[in-house]
Length: 170
Image (cartoon, rainbow, N blue to C red; front, side):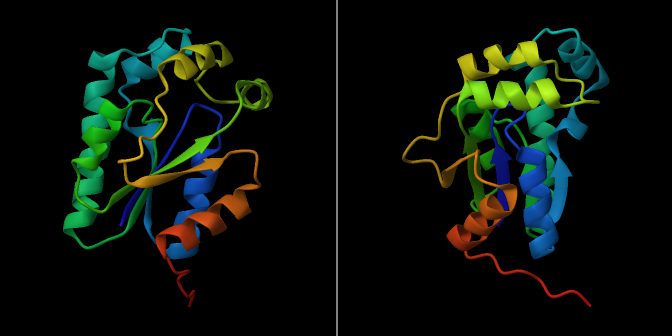
C-alpha cells in the first residue's frame, strides 16, 4: 500500500506521515523534497505554484510511489495533493495508492503556520491553498480525518482504517 498524507500547508502532513512510517516500517518521503529549487523560491516569495509548475513535482512523487510499489514496498509520502487532478496523477502510481486528507478549519492551520519556523512556505499562501483545495470525493480511495486530533491518534486511526500493522523492531 502507498499512502499520501495530504492537506494544506501546516495541517500536520509531515508529522503524521513520519509516525506512520516509523510504526509500520514503510518507506517515507517528504513531498517538499521533490520540489524544484525554483518552485521553492517562488513559494518563499509568497507566489503560489500553478498547474504547470506543480506538474513535474507531482510526476516525481508519483514515480517514487511507483518504484516502491514495483518493489512490493509500502510507502508513505506527505504531499498537499490539493485537487482531484493532482491526486489522479499520484493514484497513477498504482492501484494501492490511498489518500489521507488531514482537514480542518483555516483559523487553526493559520495559527500553526504563524508559530512554525524554518519552513519556506509563508503563511500568506494558506488562503490560496484553501481556495484550490478540493476535498476527497466519495469515489476516491482514502479517508478524511480532523487535523485537530493529536498526531499519535491520527496515526492510530490511519493504521486501523487501512489494516496496517506496526513492525517489530529488532
